[in-house]
Length: 195
Image (cartoon, rainbow, N blue to C red; front, side, top):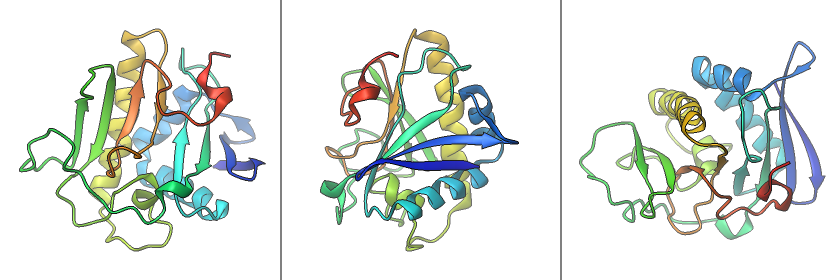
């Protein structure tokens, strides 16, 4: 279960707790991969509780999977009412895959992107979580997004010394979770640096 604590007017810190114990990234990624719909719905509840209308999600720098699993939900006022647009992605738009994993143009970031042909509004992580229940629920896309995210985080951490995981969407208005070697587009100052 996620526990969300308001740390300032525009930020909630989120941890994952089972049986009274704070979970590690290893445990959380296992939960994300094997129970993606429960993970999704628990995260959705944190977003509902925040009362934000648009959000960024940012994780601290990750150097090993035994670190405490935590992240922040940040109020992203500048993302409210954005229009979905996946055309900036240089991807074959006839791709029928529900999830696309690709490199950024600079090749320093892995992007995990839900189906760019979807009729749902996946302009950002807020709309993907869909706290207002505006989208048709696509269980396959939701499951595959979180399963692929968990697998990709493990894969990236095995080949790099440190990674930052986040969502932004200010430049491209279609959800793309970022796994990067730097905290590009980060807003939460404490997470921009190693502990």
